[in-house]
Image 1: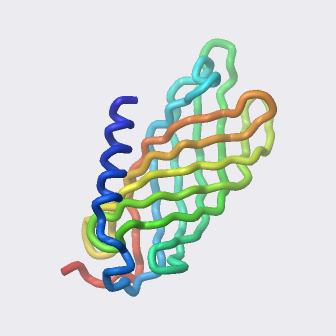
Image 2 (image 1 turned 120 degrees about the horizontal axis):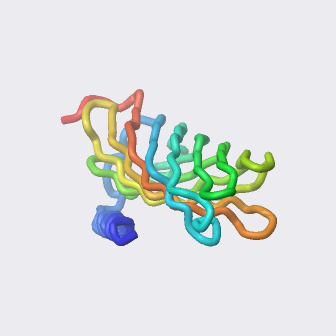
Length: 181
């Protein structure tokens, strides 16, 4: 958890030290596609019954304003139960929004996702879920970035909510980004 705190502090520092995005020339590109995976650390009461899980996520963002994006996100998150606790699979199908503090170079961002979350385990049910996130996009080559993020997932259930923190990373593609200079 100490590493998560250091990563979050680094993201906040980069965001605070970034120049105002409206001061710079706005890039022409509008679309972003990403794929992430990483370990998911169960928090709260559920951490007694589940091991660290694994998630695979993907999504699409459209730049609706200078630095504001809207889109869709989904994934598959799997957690193994300990003892007599059944394994659980979580499939979020969310709408998403994010704000990039910069649109060029290293790009810190904040965002949130929310919508139906399908849970299967001992029982199958559909619940509402939300997932605020802090992220950092690092350009690798023309149109390709490395997307790193921390996501706090909350699945609202009757009784105790199922919560977990994801430490995710993966490729992001911007199909209409011009060549890097």
